[in-house]
Image 1: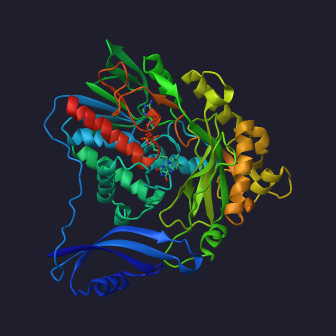
Image 2: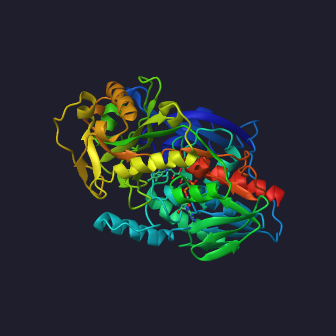
Image 3: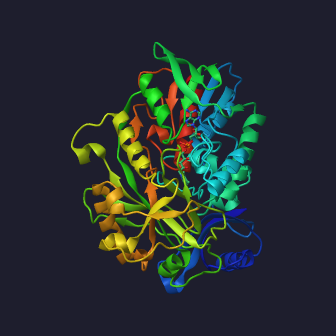
Length: 509
Ligand SMILES: Cc1cc2nc3c(=O)[nH]c(=O)nc-3n(C[C@H](O)[C@H](O)[C@H](O)COP(=O)(O)OP(=O)(O)OC[C@H]3O[C@@H](n4cnc5c(N)ncnc54)[C@H](O)[C@@H]3O)c2cc1C
């Protein structure tokens, strides 16, 4: 059996039969098996937009070549008498717990929110009636912040390839489309994530793990650098090793960890808004036409260095998506973006944020608790009229005028007019003004969009002092992983960080 890897260019509306004939023609063979390794859209020339597929072909008619053996994560199993407590069922917490359970620990997952079905009901109720459910919302609950998301599975670091393929394969086994293994911009969509999250939990329980919902951890009990137990709303729970993967919205968790001796430092983060456009406008700007057979919806990624100190960039673009009220607490108002697998809503949204560093901007030291307070105050200041989102036309913001009225939007809680020059910190609004002007020159019609709400959750604003795998400085058995640690951002990198923490525990306990 011979093996060859080839790259094939195909029209956007190709089908499997046309892929097979392209392989036959390219390699001059009749019978073969194939695996798509990579699929990316080449839209550099609007008059010639096409897919590029890297395909691995095996056939008796081919001579030579060896299929590469992919490196995979190996989790050594042995029955262990140790109890591992993992706090948080987001990507980091789930994959940490799953890895620990596979390695033979007695693993307990503690989650402040509800299981994914009940969480979905609470979110639907919130959007219908404005009734905010504590601990069961877009930020908190089973699956973490990424459950009601676009489910983009991209990650920029190349250092996590073993973990990444383990995560993608686990998602596929739990019901994700197989294409996530090869698309250059894979995404799951919130509809798939609901099913996947439930299936993953069932698999974890099948392996012997246990999950406690509606269980908020409220403190740690320590002795001589070891955590003995955690205080929870369900009472004290003891364990041998503790892994916190509580995300970056859980402000009271930061506070009790700091009180318990965990050390943090400030880091760069980003603040801005979501912008929304008609998807057809984005398609037209990127493709030169309003739709393209075989491609769901056009994406964009924009960066601007017009403002030297505060770089402005787009983040977490959700084509064919919806802007959502993502507040973790009832006294704050922030937004985020999500989509379904088909990405077929008429709207495109994206965060447009300015990268900031509080210590540089204010030219003084910030205590980590002070940084959290700074952010909380900003998030509270956007709670002007319940969960309505302050909004403004991009064009008006750039020109400093008030001309257009607010456009229709996907945001379910309603919009109110808000002047972003007044409500954003001045240094952020100045940077955004320059950045948005720049983007309007780069992407045709960008200025026609609307700025909606506060985006404050692109990454954590503080970072724990820990080793590479997550062991907190000064502790023997306390790991801090995922987005809340300040070392990861997004679904894949947070899940990978959770796995790294778990593998360190496997090697040590
Ligand atoms: C609407 C939205 C859309 C997004 N879209 C994408 C996307 O398309 N692609 C992408 O890569 N990323 C996306 N993100 C970001 C991504 O979701 C996060 O980076 C990722 O979920 C972080 O994973 P984590 O496990 O570290 O933390 P989280 O997902 O935040 O999970 C933390 C968990 O801990 C629980 N918890 C917190 N405190 C406690 C406590 N004291 N006791 C018990 N439980 C606690 C929370 O309820 C939560 O379940 C999106 C985020 C949002 C909000």
